[in-house]
Length: 421
Image (cartoon, rainbow, N blue to C red):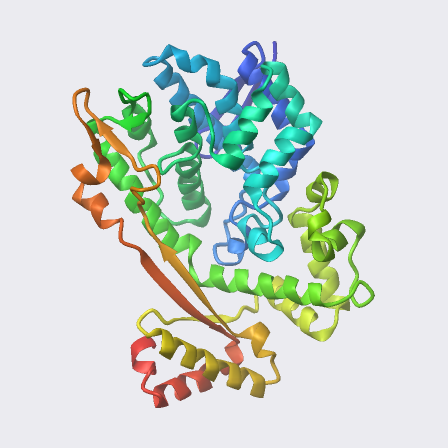
């Protein structure tokens, strides 16, 4: 028998015991090469340039999700002992849900065009260090985990909800963890009360006991605040824009014009041919090394983008939410003209980024309240939640710092400055 304890800054001791088959499986999965790679993938991508403490990894987050899922499972098992047959599915899916993230997490989905859910499923099915422990636990577990991660399909709706829903263990951990690592205080949700309030409705789907209503309302408000203050922060949008333009510029060059090792060459110029070995070989370390080389050796435009990112000489972002679509395009046109006068490529250094945030979506597996007699949708019993259904949009004009003063003057002349400065 082997016991193992991971000392987590949020959950304290995450204990594993190899005498328990499900936990022995988890230990084998954690020790695998694909899972250890997650130590080299930042949880919040380039957000470390905005929040200096945002250095935690997908490895740490994934352990936290497993821990919360196990706690929820043990509690729900007391209500429905039939859930026991899904222990391997829940443990595997909770632990491996982020296995397919590329370098810099979600940013790589934008710059390289990959889908981390699809890659997670592909690794679960095709990498022996992942599929074998799952199959050793119970035949068919790897297929079940892959189906849940890629298609959202699971025989048990309760298990599916714990892994992927509007109140899943993934969201609970990342809100807590990202709040902790960024130094913001919005993410302090009441995990204890939420877990205690989870119950099973008569249709055998997950529900919430009324005693947990305020904790869930708080959770949804927290999620809204975290997106507005952290995930959609203007400098995060700037960093993502820089990385997108950086990779775009690298792809437009030929292998004869910039250095790339054999793995990065496939990521840049043969994305459709990326195999499992090539996928796993790329992480924040390899990508970061290429940025270091490119700032020194690449043609001027790519070199400049790398220098700006690596040395945090960021572009600026101006909120345009109060402007009409037509006026936003006018502001962009002014910025492009000014950038071009500065000798900067406006296609690279100027742009608009739009985001819509809906804190609660009742039509996407909405949450329900079950008091033992009545089953109601969350928005039926909570005016606060009803108010979170309406989307909130953000629009950012991205432009180089060098033109800021002149841009302000030009927009004031067009009677647009008073609405945005």
